[in-house]
Length: 208
View 1 (cartoon, helix red, strand yellow):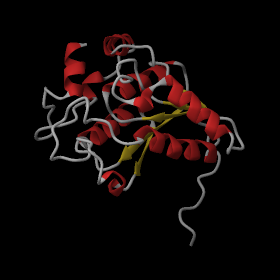
View 2 (cartoon, one colour):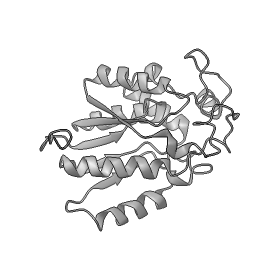
View 3 (tube, one colour):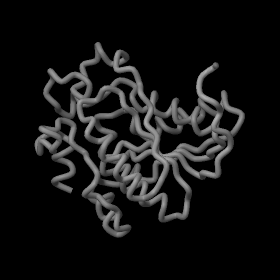
View 4 (cartoon, helix red, strand yellow):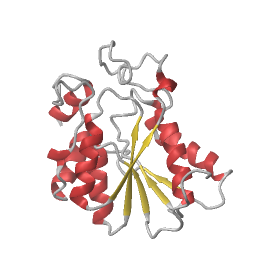
């Protein structure tokens, strides 16, 4: 045996990096409103807010889209001063950065998309992410796409339609599209599976 059998060619248009948070949930609704067939791809990397993975599963079921979860060994982040993977740290905008997280996610997504002949990858990065997360800038995504294209047989586009959107604009779009925003989960430091109300993600969502 050499691992799992190949899944082969599929008829999907799009692969979505899907956390189960607000941004990716609205992005899923937006993608589907365009008439695209989508696979939602989540990542379990030892995050303290694993509640978001349960939300991702519920939202994917709501939309009847295929949902897959990939495990990334949390050992990669064991020495990181990131409050999202180290529960001893307070969650602040400065400590919420996980080293090269989007680079890792997109490397997995690019490989998966090419293996299944999916031409597009969507990610829900928005304008308010760029101040604290350097791997959420359009320059980063453009550079990664250019690099990836050098080692791929088939072209794949990395799309960030919310890159100029504020959180409020994303919420407004979600309401227009009747997206089940209430099923999404954005908190970085949940207490008994409920939003803490004070972490950066909660504050952004609450003030939008």
